[in-house]
Length: 361
Image 1: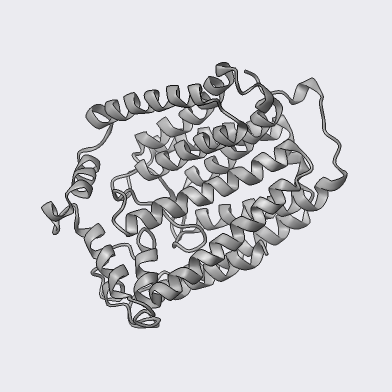
Image 2: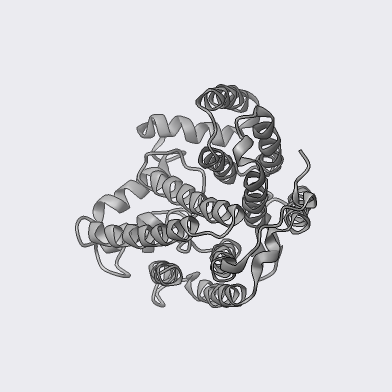
């Protein structure tokens, strides 16, 4: 119930990005990544992954992810952003490893301090951990992933029991930061995208082109779609990046409303199983880690679909298991493998209350 929905969604994504020999496609490469990612899932789920609860492991992951994000500042920009390490055929996005690191770190931190979350000090410390990643990603610049990290941190704070007063303070701080980013932090093309979102008809052939073509693709799918391989918006390349950032729109065009309902049902099945595992978790860490993965997937899905429907500004965000890309697919199957392992081995776990398990802060 955890592995099967991910498998089906991944295969549907490969089918959607395939051109069936008519043009260049990323489907064959994605199939290789899919095979590798499923191997990662099987390997991790078979191992005893309880060691990931250790503070030394959590902090090592965090430091490694931070170091890789810093090294990105030295690489040559690809499509205007320093977001990938490219090794010929293979590209690696450190932000994906950073997501795993942040989930593990917040799960560790909150598992020890969730009863003390009313102390604003813990919100500041956990926020500082997340903010370091967010700032490094904004420098790339990668607004989409910066938003994902922000939502991930806020979501885990909410499930830990943050007070309404502290939530209001965070809202005010977020408004101030957003204002500063608008005038000082955002690149001109990012501001243009937001303006075109407010008034998409103002620049259909420019900044609003992608969102406009995505809405056409989704609407033209109607009830049962145009059929697999017959999506004109995607296959004729009216819809840019239809294999990654706009794969939901390409899928909706070919599968229609019925296909979208099926896709969302598969995601719902995945979330239901994750929530069931979280409720039965043997330790607080296991529960927070599983819920963190839920929040990560939910943020990606909501933002990606919102962009494809014209409900959110274009930020270039993938959808789990479906979009083309190797590093994010490996991460997604890896976290499912870790969760499966923790669930299998967690029953006999004894909570380690050693003082060494506390994070500094």
